[in-house]
Amino acid sequence: MLAAVVLLPSAIAAAATTQAADVLLSQGKPVATSTVESSSYTGAKAVDGSTTTRWASAEGSDPQWLRIDLGQTASIHRVVLNWEAAYAKKYRIEVSDDGTTFTTAATIDTGDGKVDDLGGLTARGRFVRFVGLTRATSYGYSFWEMQVFGSTDSSGDTQAPTTPAGLTAGPATATSVPLTWGAATDNVGVTGYDILRNGTAVATSATTSYTDTGLTPGTSYTYAVRARDAAGNTSPASTAITVKTAAGSAGFVLAAAGDIAEQCTASSSGCVHPKTAKLVENMNPAAVITMGDNQYDEPTLSDFKNYYDKSWGKFKSITHPIPGNHESYSGFTGYDQYFGAIAKPQGQRYYSWEMGNWHFIALDSNDFVTHDDFAEPPQITWLKQDLATNKKGCVAAYYHHPRWSSGDHGDNKDSIELWNLMVANKVDLVLNGHDHDYERFVPQNADGKADGGGPVEIVSGSGGANLYDLSPAHATTAKLLKTFGVLKLSMTDTSFQTQLIGVDGKVLDSSPTYTCH
Image 1: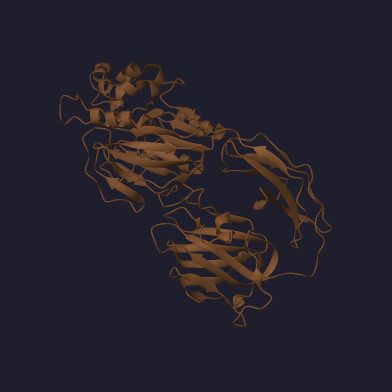
Image 2: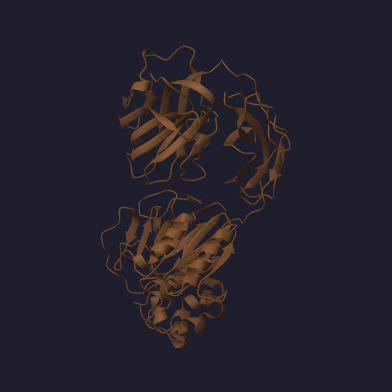
């Protein structure tokens, strides 16, 4: 054994070697995971029999898990984990009869990242789960294969359920297909259904419906379902149907920054906003996002015309702005007059818009920074409704005041409710300004702790205003820079990746490719 293992009394085996009848139970079986780093590293890759494909969880967060459904109750005597570089220092192997209530079969406290061959187990159940407790690296958890060996039950109920009938697909989106079918019957009782995509089981459902997600736009998929009972008996697969997802966008690029135009022009060598505008021009973006403080200092319409308009103003027709605190100092008069209809496209300084499979939410966080309670509850009411009615698969929000920041202003408690709503509604990306620096965080939860299910927050107040000094970085900070630059956002129907481009045109930071929640 290549990792120290502590077995609970219920899992201690009398024999040191695996029984001759043991077989590989896990290969090709349905897998569920807590998170994935991207669509290239799904849980199914850990049971496909290949040591060149792997599962990888979201980086920077504990705990994480991967669960295998063996399809029927089995005696489990051995589990083998073939680790990639991102291994676990501490983890558990658990088993369950129902996939909900688990008992521990093995606890590993000194993992070394080699092949962990955990033999001598006497666990019993249908579901086997790896639970990563402590990462050995700053990344997530990743292994090429997880193999479960043992023997399946051969006694008791051996009658399979009837074959499900009436498999039907609802309207497909670019990345999802909703499925429904008729209930199967069984002499004891049907416990669930396997969903087969292109002949491979990809999920289980306790009901007669399931929505398959994370698909590729404009692609045909063949589906069938089969029924299972408590003894693990499975019916034949249903009559297959073929469904084609809707065509999606080919992907697009956005440019984003906050804290942009000081009262200077390109005639001054120290004037930065004309230089960052040149970066935007080179990106040729489909749209431009500004995260507030577009113009300094208490901007009037003439300020906007004399400075912002001579640089970033060339992108005005594709800009989706929000105001910062400096726009509020003049009662938003200059901001409203300069941007006109695009300042309030839905009648307020907060609004939403869409591109491809993305839903973008533009908020005016000035409403929340000068009072102990919310000055304008209608914005929160609107936000909740907007999130609830969104039909797009990916969501980004942007507003001026960041919840988390290692810059001069620091964390902003006035943005707590905004951030908590983003977390609760599985928003993928949150963009802010206010602090004149650049900071990218790993995905975080409501408490600011690393969590693959949370949004990625990026503070990019680097558009041209004088830079601020930095404070010590948060534990969840992936990159912190005192620099000017523009954020380049590369969006697809199912993912996003970000880069900070400096005024010299060099890439100063690149994020991983994140899969939308």
